[in-house]
Length: 239
Ligand code: DGL
Image (cartoon, rainbow, N blue to C red; front, side, top):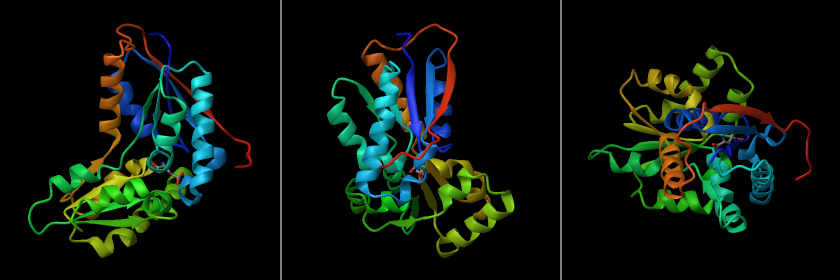
């Protein structure tokens, strides 16, 4: 029970997921791995993303983690099945773009926008998710946004980017944040719509699923101080 839980993303995006996990499971120890060497995942091929995600999963399970959370929509859409196949007996949680709840809660005449990376937009798993939404979810792939956020672009730059990005969808009723990096700009999305938009983020669902599976498997820690250790990959690896 005292084994840690591993959480990974290509960079700081998954911190929003980590935060939800820590607040639900305060007695657990977490290990966070930012795969900075391979950031951005969103512009990579399927094979490259699978290889990067597997490296992170191997590293975290190699650190004796009792579960891992793929705190990245791109890696989940592309590689979660591959990793689960290789780690059949382990708990592997993915981060799904919150397109389903976004679609379910649309009123008549409303539509929503899903902001995702290019790789997520192309992935078969994500296409299947959107195909079930009766053309009421518009997919908007963003090739640069995750990197802008990762390198800590200033508020003015991000606000201008968000304004350009959302202008074509200014009458949308809902926005699904389909990349964990985008959680960091949720306040700017809300600001663009004057607070009149529903914002959906998959982080809550991933944290809830983690809690459920840990409890079901008898692996949840019920005491302990809890804590987080941070690691990152820095050197370029050949994918
Ligand atoms: N944060 C990741 C996601 O949720 C991907 C960002 C990137 O590396 O392109 O999709």
